Length: 129
Image (cartoon, rainbow, N blue to C red; front, top):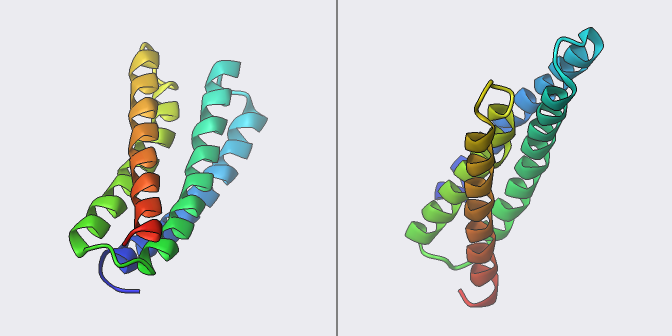
């Protein structure tokens, strides 16, 4: 593993403890009942998506490191993964803010598109590169 896949693997691994801390914080929020039911649901969804998508990224990065894709394509794919995860999970957290529901939905949708593009580039790398 080298270059972008190595760097982004480190980023994903370092990010995992923040998601773990988010789980701990979520337990406190649920216990203290300081949020509305909708806010709790968005907090759970954002946290869960962040964790699952980081694991997806770690798998995708391992696959990408074994392809013959150019460094430029690897960098693009890695950035798509990173920003896709941030947008997909971050959009749920935007729902926590007053009057930001539509923005949160748009950000989550953009994240889904970015992750789909990264996944398709990874599949291309496996099949053709």
